[in-house]
Length: 593
Image (cartoon, rainbow, N blue to C red; front, side, top):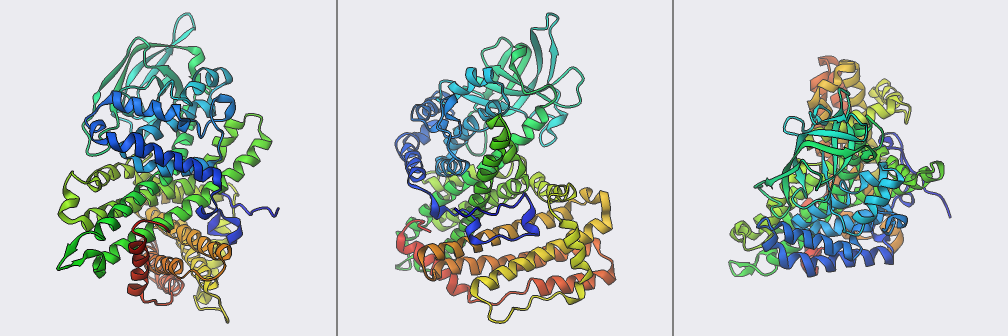
């Protein structure tokens, strides 16, 4: 079997792959589809009938729903068989996260338990800790939570004040402090808690059982959305934690926190896909039932625009999410052959793709916000009523741009991490950028003779990357090490990178899909045409904003001219293309792309 070409994190900026090198959702196997079906069945049977009740802060009801999911095996998808789970691939984990993403606040509680509540112990725990805790977390016998944020330490997690001191007899760490915004706090049995030992500069991590004396759980917070999720403060008052419950090494807590956040960002990118698909289904069903002026509102061009745009943004995000998921799977397998600790190898592979994780978190959460907002708008006055689920979807969506690191933090991570990886020698970013700048007078975006449909799209995307490289080159030359303080420019670069990655993932997916199906797939080409057409406009504007922020008057003329040439794309009848996408959705009466 021919091996896939797998790029390093951020390397897509200077390298290309072929359609055969990516995984697309159309390639899910029967076992993966069966797991997704089990997740959907669970939502229908156990979650949706109880949503109204669980949103009244019924901790016991949410707890019972989680335990039922554990009894059915849904909590063990990410956990290896030797610890009571099913040891599924990362792609399969992402599919489960997507499917259960349609579960509103249940999804938040479930993902917190299965992700940040369980996986730190699996990935960084020793064998004794894995046997004591992971085996029970995988079945739902124990429920988990993750305690990082403090009142004075949000995005700056390492500034936390929670403290640990070794007892005189050396048997315990005595922990004092306060954590806030803790998902599952109201019923969690195990807590992964971050604290500084003595006067350490960096955090350490501990496994604390919620029934230890001195652990005090506050009342649930009153929140804008995800009301069924138990979110509370936890106080630690002279809590005696056995020394054997130190997670990882002393001072390794900050690394653990960052690694788990990378994983959480990726899974959030999958989670929002399920939420968006549910919102789109509700949108089209309503549009196909609601009449105004004697006709169905689904016949109106303005409504078709909204429906089509929902589909386009979702389909592009989905393409990128599963592309990087398969890259992680392949890197996991490679690392597992090189490392005796397979769990540590797994988190190292996930952490490697920090650039893509941050992009998927930002793109996914902002895609979902668009989709649920337009879903409310399509429903009109009924969308504003709590009688229909679109109102809940709208409220629940907003948190995604805040947790797992705010989108502001993640945008900075995209550009900063890519440049740091290049400085380490992972790929030749700065050399390619220098070469481009030196040939700037000869840069143009004109087509080659006899260019194919996909050849044209890949040329556009290649040109998008050139614009990004020119901006990175100019910004680094102007600001040098102080570039990290120029957050507006860093954000411009991050957004361009995300558009380029998503455009490329979408183009490769459509091309591979056509090779599988055999023949041209017009409606998918419409999705690709529109996304790339719009991305070109966004990248042109973002590059101009960046250039005028760092370039002199003389150099800005050259750079702006190059950016305009490299973002030039062929015009399309965007109205008709969107109508064709909407018409398929309207005819199917649900999302079947």
